[in-house]
Length: 171
Image (cartoon, rainbow, N blue to C red; front, side, top):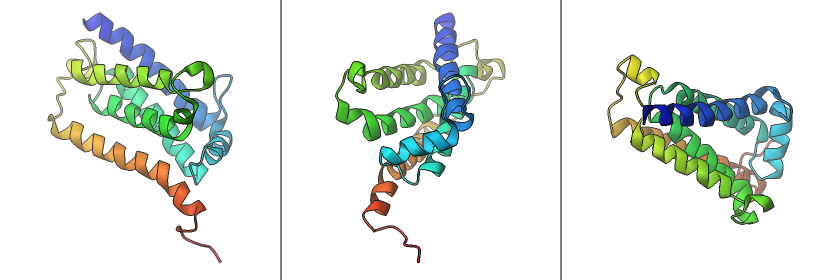
């Protein structure tokens, strides 16, 4: 079981870290960097695009890193679930389930992996195990989930509020 958790953590955590680097710095072939990510977010209704692009990139980099190293579990998988819920709600839900049409199929798979990591823990080949780190449960998980939920709701509603005139006006 430890080897299986290690493989899942390295693949999923590593790919999320790379995805975060793409958003933040335009790294690795198709990375858009902050300007491109911000423009995409604006087109998807996530406004203002720039701060949410930075937040999404940092969330993927941090959440992926925590998963990759098996550190401070369950915070990493909870962060990544928030990223995926935001992606589903803002972009993929309207396209249906199947990824071939830009749907949310893959996002659901990643959420399931993160739920499994929360349930199983990071395994024996993790920094948590090596350093004997055990965050108080369920308190830390609940607090992390609340913070991620608030960030997700903000990402999905702030742009809508601003575009309807309920936000701050500059004169």
